[in-house]
Image (tube, rainbow, N blue to C red; front, side, top):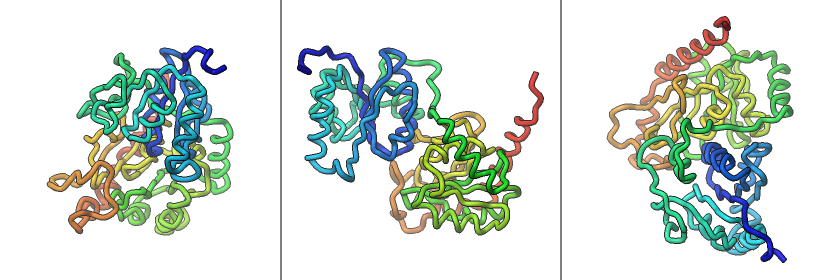
Length: 345
């Protein structure tokens, strides 16, 4: 019987957005270094990002908005997790749903943030740092400080790389282009001038995104005919990450592609409006830049960015000029080009 088996495995429950899952990878590495690869509960969309990751033993898909929606789905997954006899669970996502899964799974050790709404259910409560990057905040769940922090990482497969290369070769585009990711699920996070930016830049531009970004990406690409192409919806999420890996720089809103670029070591020009990097989700590394409308008292207006500006003016994005973003893009792209041609000793 299952009850006769000993508990040893580690479970991480992270059912937040794609970018959050990417930023959780350093925590996964830290935990795996301590007790071996971990099992992770993730949404189906995020699961593909962790396939083949050396810190992950198994992924349990939780379709919380589809077939697993509601209390029935929660209960079924909890029972499934219970049969796996986990010794400990880490809960980077501060939600009642995640806490309920750990309880239903009867995991004896449950570690989460002290400011979470379900903190009373945790056996270990960790103070969530008010400042610093989300990567370091999440690493605090592992207990010991890990210095330097493990990098944000993906385990791209050869087929992901081949799909990106094939897409570029079919269009005669070489590595070193400028990538643009204009989409976001949060309306106020979308900078409205990406078509003008594509037109202002020189050289090849590739627009990336998912199926939901296809119309916007086509509009951006159409602004620079003959040297801009849209890959939105044409490639898998992992192949899109491989495509971003081949860019000199990615220009993006505060959204998942920013963190994909971090994971594949591509520098970023990140455009912020209703959110600010100081909230912990900025680009990492000295090669990236974060831009925003300085001096607006209404920034930040929320943790995620609402669908509509609460004050009705959306000045944080509308008053961030194309010239500012274009100059930053050219500067970062130029620095990367110089790095690429610098002789190695």
